[in-house]
Image (cartoon, rainbow, N blue to C red; front, side, top):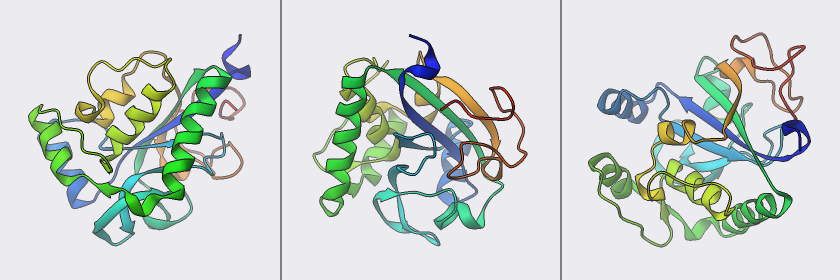
Length: 200
């Protein structure tokens, strides 16, 4: 089946200018330090593990994200890459339902600062209810039964997610180049597609 007709899970990779992001980038040299997941081309279902308040790194947890709100609203020059991976209808539903169930009980989940540090050291640790962004996204992708991870989810960095086989780049540029709610762009560079439109 052609890519554009298949169900897709959308992956948004970013590298912000926060202290945490700068520290991770300096330590790893990775192009991206944060990853989010969505189940619609408009990115209205975008979610991840990150800061609960736009101006403070803590507290952090499972959050809904918006290109037009929170941190991204004030920092439209953030470098990003939007990707998608095609999956079967059943796999799509499994991942979407898992994310929805977690969001309904988001107060039960905590940001895993310890897990993030251990990931950097290459030490695997999985604690119930504790996640960092790339661990969360990787576990969701793995739950489809169709995405094979190269390492345990707790060792996956955003850059590792970006390099997963089958992931297709739809856009590369600044956040300002992604227009929330239309699937088009505001003039950023690096779009992969035709007529300036993202794949839907």
